[in-house]
Length: 294
Image (cartoon, rainbow, N blue to C red; front, side, top):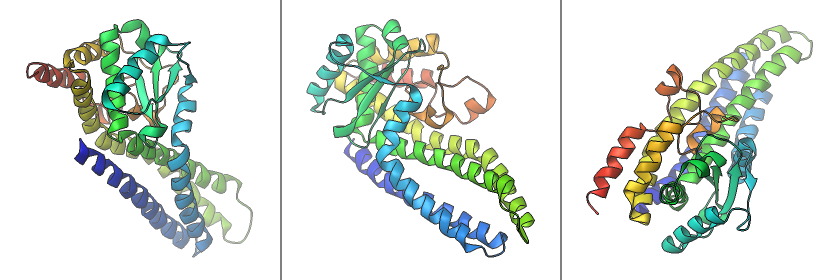
């Protein structure tokens, strides 16, 4: 676990630095193609550095807002609060903020830059579907993401995926609404090409990056939950219910799909190809094997 935590902290900076460098190269190419208009390069570099820093601090609140999460207190959700509090006492983890999403689809996710500033969000469908034992397994999984610093890396990826979409929109707006002037038609065409390509490639790139980063973290969080609750069969039973009763979220968003414990998107060819989650039967098999070793 400690090596995973150290790796996640390193990966946060590698992803941020790589994002700035890649967008810087795109900026150089865009400036050169637009007739050595290096203000484009400067804008993209400043945007990349500024947005990466911005997302590092606000991506958790952005994700909660996009999910439609509502904060709840101990009095409003005593069952929820009690289970999380017991897990936090067991692991010595700071108590996270608790949120609920009004949605019949059973699901959950964790956010935050570090354990001291973390939050756990569950859907109302999860409460209705799970027993206390199963719900404890799911919450232990989300607390595992917090303890392993998975939430920092996944939030950074979420923020940078959103940034790609913003840049695509920026290029398209310049192409359609750019000022008139000598040689401006060629630049507008190039911006339009950049925008269209980015708009097409962004979802594919997001899926590849999210899937590569997310799948192993789900296995690790499952194992962390099993070690915390000493009941891997409880989480295995919860995952079986997620597979049986799972459905797309009403406010599903591709850019934050990797945050949820189960895939929140409507299944399809591309969804399976770029799935951010390992197959639930594989996760259940691993947990059942762990159960036989306790």
